[in-house]
Image (tube, rainbow, N blue to C red; front, top):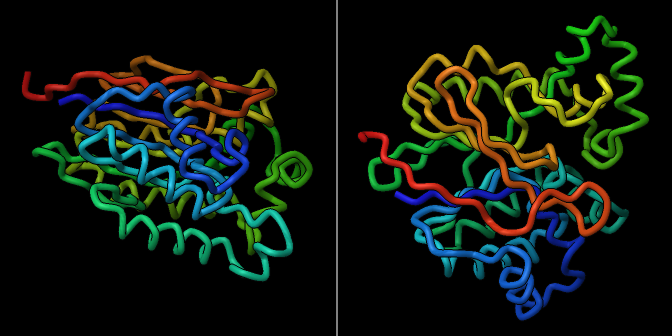
Length: 264
């Protein structure tokens, strides 16, 4: 089976209009899609649900199945219009799920498992838990204070979340099904990779998930950190292929893929 994977598409930074033809051009000229059995999108589609739905309709034409989960940007309410429309980030996410429900062959996973030709794929958002900085001796009070200043999550997710609490909630969703999974994908990486040199910044990009690895999972796909990765930790292969933004912290063009035969 061929699995393709991508994250951090941030569509509205690349395509300003809800225009199907421009989205088609973006897919063709930036993502260079090639056919595969499954495309996994590990969060951060973009800030506009309708535009995201148009994108998923078009990208699905290249893949047998498309599996999606949410990232932090998929919860953002950026302006007064969005706040008035949705009131809460959960309502915006629910609308996105509803759009996806009507796109044939596209599935939103939020602590759920999809069975694709006998391969069990678990998807969830995941969330950072501040533990990276705590393990470097920084107090939760300092970490929370810097999070309020640095991270747009503190401003644009409504109502405001407590990251360690939300991370625990997300982690339990993963734990509930992980022993049945062959492949897992989350937006936030479940181990301490180095996204930034700064310890505090790194604590906003990872969660402690090492206790989740002792199971049947062979592949874990993630996003959030705008750097491509392909490495092993213990027996699990960790993969990421973020797109990122047109300027600043950009990942990579194209969509990575690999052939998987878990019985081989």
